[in-house]
Amino acid sequence: MVSYAGTHFEGFQKQPRGRTVQGELESAIEKVTGQPTEVHGSGRTDSGVHAHGQVFSFYSDASIPPERWPAVLHRWLPQDIVVLKSAEAPSAFHPRYAAIGKTYRYSIWNSRVSHLFSRAFVYHHPVQLDVSRMNDALSHLIGRHDFTSFCSVRTASTKSRIRTLRQAEVVEEPVPYPPSTGRLLHLYVSGSGFLYNMVRIIAGTLIQVGEGKRNPEQMRSILADRNRQAAGPTARAEGLTLLSVDYGELDPFK
Amino acid sequence: MVSYAGTHFEGFQKQPRGRTVQGELESAIEKVTGQPTEVHGSGRTDSGVHAHGQVFSFYSDASIPPERWPAVLHRWLPQDIVVLKSAEAPSAFHPRYAAIGKTYRYSIWNSRVSHLFSRAFVYHHPVQLDVSRMNDALSHLIGRHDFTSFCSVRTASTKSRIRTLRQAEVVEEPVPYPPSTGRLLHLYVSGSGFLYNMVRIIAGTLIQVGEGKRNPEQMRSILADRNRQAAGPTARAEGLTLLSVDYGELDPFK
Image 1 (spheres, helix red, strand yellow):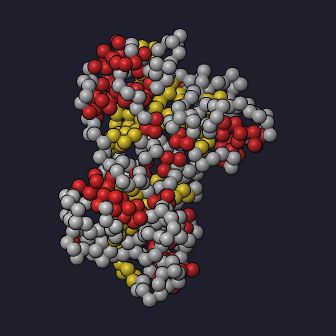
Image 2: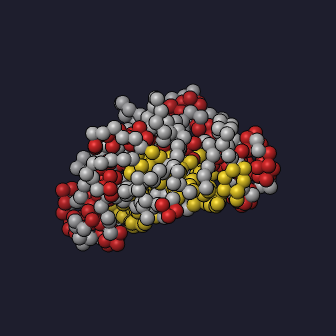
Image 3: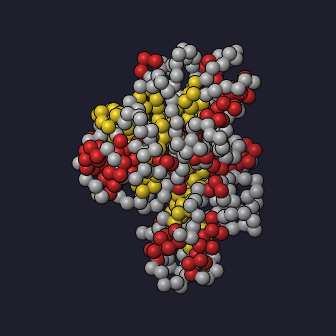
């Protein structure tokens, strides 16, 4: 299980060019074992998106006890990646295919002035947002729906866009003093899986509801439209964090 | 009143070389008024030290309403400085000489793993700290004392080292999930004034008490020694934030 600050990465997945989380993990493992190694993640995160509990797997026959990998990798990893824990998994375990759900958080700093101390990890929205309107809107999204309106037009057209949103809530979090200059709002969403840009488009649409630009009930017609144009903008990457991946009975850390 | 993230500054005070908060404020004001302007702060902060409510003053005859300066300066200031509010002050007001007290916070991330999302704003201490021992130690520092043992040897020798510590407390703050991988401890200190490195030396000594390397009662003999060598190390700059400056009846924002 790995945390990373996504700010200075071109996302999780390895790219021909640019710094990626997968690339850093693979090169750290290779430095330890001397073997080129392929890392599999539970899914991609985009450039600028953070993770608390991303899950990845790799094969190694090195004589390192399974739970020792966080300490062993620590000295080979950059400061913006921290492996939190590790465990041996059955050879059939694949972090993407075994996942039965994911939880994301979208963080909004709702204040006239920017949050100097969390600037890279929250989206700054200066206009006052109405949390109860945002939660009203979310109630229409919970459940099993075709989320075509809430995914990037770059989503493969052959793919099913039906997903189940199990829980979704906006909460105002306590802000350790200082700053007392605004409100920290967290949108938490848990579901069976998420389409490309889905959480960020939900967040962008909810912000319009919170500002009063849309009615909460509009979420129903947006879903029914099955058209990306019906929803709001894709909210900025810096507010998004993959919190955890749910493996149910197959959880290797259980 | 100005907030800044100290990470990329050589401190508040203007230097022959290097980026400073005072330098950025003066050049922003000059861009607005066309006049070279001198900024006075409530005091220096060191390289890497942050501020929430630093106070500064300057003279201007520009026809800008006093309370409009935060908005006016915003477009000329870098992203790591935010002016929070402004007000007209009597011409005799000097932010340093009018101050009757200051409050600082020292932030400790007490966890085996670093706090990825606040790395620049907390000091990471991996060994478990005992908060109640730390508060016991602080109780011996509260009051009027000669703080020679708790200031840098570079403090001018002609200066009185007697200061009054009015309040001092270590509290465990709620950490918005994630991460749930550690504890956020805040040391708050309020006093009549602080000597060079005083808060960081108090923090460094308290950390040794929290680890069990020193007894809380030792604070008394450290004070009595009037010798910098008697106290613990100077804790790292990144954990320190100037929270507020107290002007009592003279507060220009009252």
